[in-house]
Amino acid sequence: MPSKTAKPPRREPRDKKATRRIAIVAFPGVTLLDISGPAQVFAELEAIELPGPDYSLSYLSTSGGLVPTDVGMMIDTAPIAGVAPAEVDTLVIPGGPGIWKIRNDAELMNWIAEALPKARRIASVCLGAFALAWTGILDGKRAATHWRYCPRLQDGFPNIRVEPNAIFVKDGHVWSSAGVSAGIDLALAMIEEDFGHTIALDVARRLVVFLKRPGGQSQFSTVLAAQASDVEGRFSALHAWIIENITSDLKVETLAEKAGMTPRTFARTYVSRTGMTPASGVEALRVETARLLLESRQIGGVVEVAKRAGFGDDERMRRAFLRHLGVSPTEYRNRFSGS
Image (cartoon, rainbow, N blue to C red; front, side, top):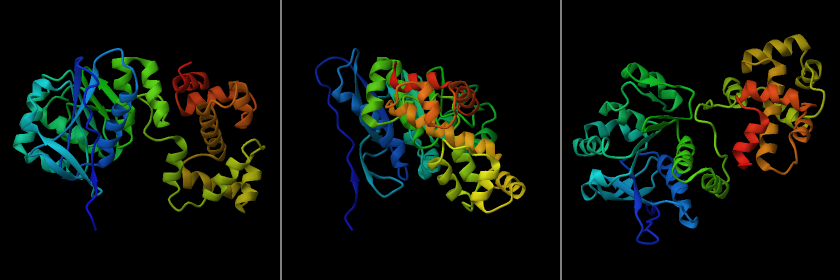
C-alpha cells in the first residue's frame, strides 16, 4: 500500500511585507488533526486581505523530512536547526501518542526551551501541554489539555492550575487547548487577536465552524455528556424521536409510553442511564436544536427559534441557554454571526 503523505501548504509571503512565522512542531506519533486543524485555519488567511503582517507557516521536526502521524499519514517537515528560535512569532506544540518520547529528544526540547522566551506567543494543543509543562513555563499558570489527561497533568505538575473543562486557556503569552478539534478554536482566537473579529469570522465561515466557542465553555455539550453516560445506547431511539417531535408536549408520561415503561420506571431508569432527569434531557435536546438554528442564521429572530425548538417563548429558551451553555441565545447568535 503506498504511503500516505500529508503535504502541508507551503505558504510563501504574498509580497515583501513583514511576516509572522508560525512554527508547528511535529514528531513521530503526533495527532494529525492537532497539526492540520490549526494549520488549515491559519492557511485560510491566504485568500483574505490582512491589515497586518501575514503569517508564514513552518512545519518543523528534529531532523526534518517525513514524520509519521498517529494515523499513518506523513508530514513533510524542515529540520529545527534551520530555524532560529528568535525567528518564531508563534510556537505551536501539538499532542499525540508520541508526545511522551519527545521528552528524551534533547535537541528538540532544547530548541523549544530556547524559543519559549523569544516567541511572542506559545501554544499547545491537546497533550502538547505536557511538553510545555516539562519546560516549566506553565508553572503558576492556568492551562488546558484533553479531559482524559487533566488529572495526570495536575498530579504531575501541582504548580499548574489545570482547567479540566476549558476548550482553551490564554494566560499571558501562553495558550493551551483541549483535545483535537479545540486546536481550531485556539487558532481562530489567535487570528481574532491579531486581525480582529471580522477576519476571524470570515475564516470561521469558510471552514463552516462556530466562531467561536468561548474558551471557558465545557469540552462537552450536555447532550454529549448524556450520551457518554448511556453507554448501552438504550435511549438513542427515544432521543431521535424527541428531536423529530421537539415542538410536542414532551411530558414524562409521553416519553415513558414511547420507551415502553411506566412513568415511574422510566424516570428512574433514565436518570440512572443518562445522569439527567427526563425534563432536563428534553431541555438539552431543545437547546441543541435551537443552537443549530441560531448558527444557520436561516430563521429571523430569537422568538421564532424558541418556537421551532419547542421552548414556546424566548424567555424560557434564554434561561435554558444560560444553564447549558452559559450564554444567552442572543449572545450565542452574535458570536456566530458577528452582528
